[in-house]
Length: 513
Image (cartoon, rainbow, N blue to C red):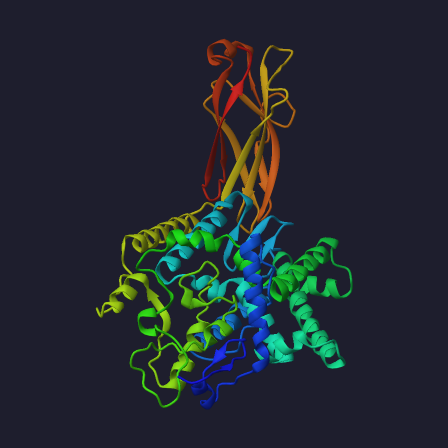
């Protein structure tokens, strides 16, 4: 074994890596000392002050996947509000829109009304089961690649690295006294961060109003106050969480790291260190053999690349978001020292035990847990699709008067009031007829006019709702034989004579006992 030099993360870098072109920076050691000091203090006090993490830039297959996912997700987020979708009538032409003014959720050809909010609930259930399935198969893929916190943090770190340099340069800049160069770099970095945060907040509010119209109103300062307020809130949170909080969000604010443990089993894939191959670890001198030692040369490049600042060699940890950057960092080192890749890799606990015993690895993706999650996803998706494509274009709500519950008229008859709200989901005007059944001798009138019914219809505009008041009266002679216990069943029938669609709403007629 040879003597080693301090690495850029404050740890030792073996001379074999120096000869292979791996950079070493002797000035990084104090950072590691500070981390150890903070950790020691935390053990005594139960609280650990945050030590800023500067992840090192790495390249490899997983870093390439993360770039592709980041670009794709950011494009979806920023571009979606600007997609157009032609709809008939006065409906908005925005493909994806949550319209509070008309109380609609538009998603391309799908139009969700407030009464159909159960579809949103179904989507949330599908998302939950999808996360459970992914987690049980391949660990926290969502956290490492697609979570908004991960995506925007990745983007902010890219800006920071572009302006201030890679890990060692940023560590030196943090410790350097304030100078013109440091001020300019920090100013540029925060200016770009704010620009990203503003565009993020701006894109979010475009989902709730027509994007081109709202963008023009924002520029000329004619947008609603709520738009500026919402944009400011999302700008602030993006700037704070992506630029400063970063890993703190994943460790302390997000509940998923604590929930996901229940989805894991011995066959779940997770980023793991193959200790049976890596131990015993230690620096390795170029030109010497590998007999009697492990493949891990203790270069700590996996730690330097980790955005959470953890050491994957310590085993599975709550803080690990499984971004796989440690795999790329380790594979690069293994290639330099001439050892096989995969010292750190995606692997299940069961396979780690098999490989340690010299047994072949096995794949158990199809197992009761994953089959159950998949069946639930298919079932919920099928049910939602069936109800979505077979739903009626006519709906109605019936509200009976509560105060007073009934009114006794001068001729001895009893009258109840009802409000019928008809919902027309077609893009054309409809004339609906209203009738009642189930109450022998009852007479229905429109509005407060008592007598024979003249007009028992509701005209509802295209893609709109209409509420009308109707009164149902029961003559005095029919009260004794009809009302039992002061109530009788009553059914309202709302029908479209043109299409034949019919809605029935059950209620009760109230009177004196």
